[in-house]
Image (cartoon, rainbow, N blue to C red; front, top):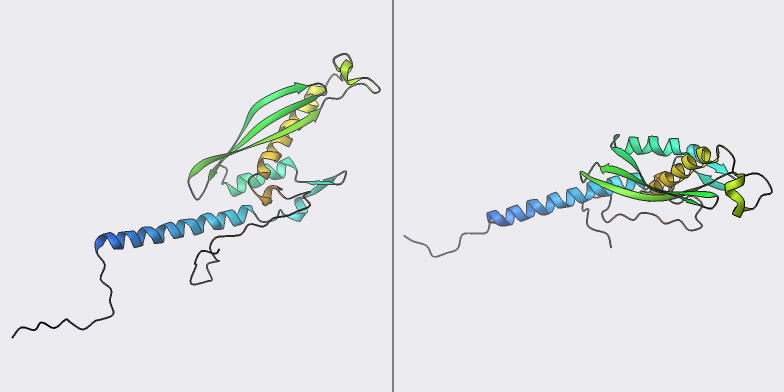
Length: 190
């Protein structure tokens, strides 16, 4: 005897293969985004206060600390590049680039920075007469300083950990799109 009756619902939703693949892709994308956010939170934490120095009322992180911290965060996959060097009156201006291999997205990223260094000259001489009165080692002292300032300036663009909010009147804080892992919903925040 045949029955034309529908079977009772079991509460199990049937999905075809493409729906299952879409759900799996969506979950993978969500997990990937959460990993990116976790790393972004890491680079946007305030710098270690014991590493911050002060010179004439301005806070800064020494170049050696910045370089070591970049090595730590990016597992040594950091490159430094001199983009340009200009001599302007009694100063040198350097544009430098930091390249880092992002450990989550597995891609090289770069950040540019600018720095300047003052070329020393004899006391009480005009800047316009600089070429006649510059100190013998002026370039030797100013060029590395300008390069270090350019690297530190580029690193600030990466995140707070590298000094992005030092000496600013207004501090902004990274707001994640997803809640921390302890929230079981992990829905996007608006």
